[in-house]
Length: 231
Ligand code: C5P
Image (cartoon, rainbow, N blue to C red; front, side, top):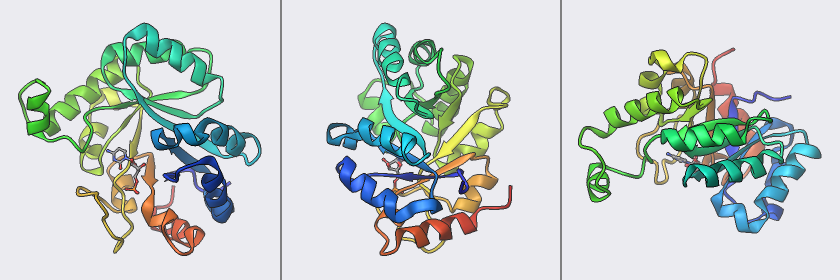
């Protein structure tokens, strides 16, 4: 099995396109992220097929947020799909409920702190507490770990600070916003290279467009893997 530190974001519209891409990537990639954009395009069926027929690991990026009872019920349902990672928002009541729902499965619950698309003005508009965004991210990460999150989704810029938290011992850090040296940034602003993200404490890196938009996606995936340090 190839190096599962690389998670490829299958940000294509439907399961058919996802399967075609996974076929092109073949043995180069063993871990896939399926997001909300594919939910109505057969995302869960794709997750199951990649898992059962191709032996891949699956990260379902749902970023759930609701009252505890609803989160618990949603996660209990999703746990039947034999997924590896599931995202929820990092509010303690959400994380606790998600862990209840995942109790009889191996699915890891990863918490989102503050979406990287939000700046201080957005937090003000949502009446969220004063303070620098990065400090709030670290505080929310600590709270999510205390509530039982198995890991955190973090920008590479925050990975080192989160890794340094005492609460982060034994927890996973997964970073999107990773760009191979010299790749186009797209709309990602605060990026790091694969090597830097791992050096800063990331257990897994999520890479989308630099791989799935490449003319040879398998070659692009192997180039990202080649940038990772030896384990
Ligand atoms: O194409 P790219 O490598 O930018 O894709 C990164 C993936 O990670 C996308 O699926 C995107 O939605 C997701 N993501 C992100 N930044 C976050 C959270 C998730 O880029 N803060």
